[in-house]
Amino acid sequence: MHALILVDIQNDFVPGGALAVPAGNEIIPLVNGLQNSFDLVIATQDWHPKHHKSFASTHNNKRPFEKIILHGLDQVLWPDHCVQGTDGAQLHSNLNTNKVEAIFRKGMDPEIDSYSGFYDNGYKKNTGLAGYLRERKVQKVFVCGLAGDYCVFYTAKDALKENFETYIIEDATRPIDEDGFLKAKDEILTSGGQIISSKNLHRYL
Image 1 (cartoon, rainbow, N blue to C red):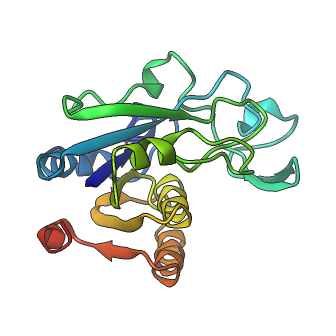
Image 2 (cartoon, helix red, strand yellow):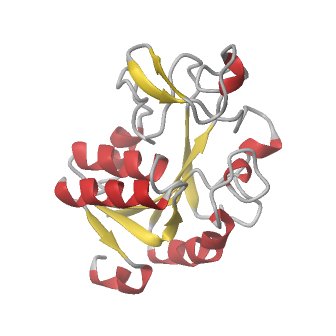
């Protein structure tokens, strides 16, 4: 079986949101159409408690996008975003969720960030996504969503570590930083993944 993973298509990550990805809303019609090609569609959802340690507001004299070391890991400090129960944390209203079989929430531990849909950034806890996919006999995963250079990249990277055949659908993804996305794509390719276009999706299904 093949699975489509929709990464963090939430209000705070589109223009007007607290941590907007440039043109992040533009992928939604394409993502809605892509779902029709898959028997299994999964979504991830950033779901932070208030005062999460990845928020710049949690640290004295720190500003968004500064970098610190948090529990031994490099940490970008973000604007407060996707706080549990807020409108910003909700999946975008234009996203068709009728085919979404399960939603895996991440970033709930206040002490550590979690870009990947599979693990937190320190690999201390897993979300159960890998086990869920194996239970469903998934062999190939196709990843899209927001943002290409962070949560999409780390989700794809961990999918490869979990030995799934992994594809990023590039035109159904938007990054925060284009240069960062170039590096991310190179790492995925080097690790055995593929970067594809939705126009060529049929070749891989």
